[in-house]
Length: 169
Image (cartoon, rainbow, N blue to C red; front, side, top):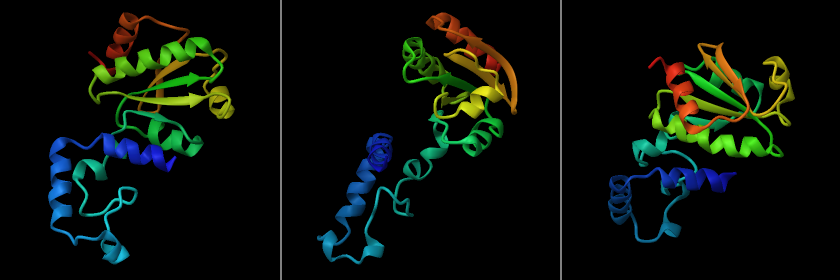
């Protein structure tokens, strides 16, 4: 998990941020092992010396996996953005096809809509609460209320129009 977090944070660094890190580290001491632990830069723990994009990367995630009911409440129900909730399962073939298509449709909106992924095997309580009887099921929520939904697989054009309708275009 920590490895994925590190890779995700490094992936989001722009070339400008990397140049900033290189100049910061060039002015630092020559040996990191001789530095006190408090002055070393860590990519796992945000600090003041890291670029702004690295500090706030987790807030800008538009696609995320729901961890538990509290996480769902915080990131979906209390979200300022409209959120598409993708109820899926690891064993579901159509879910594996729909997931990347849905992420592509969300990415086209450039941050105007978020996507929550809920594995029904891990979060059965959420699936029951929202009446999910088949997968894949996609529920669109705005302000904590369900505004639209569909069950099954859709092509790219249908997904684009569904997402556009949710954000009000």
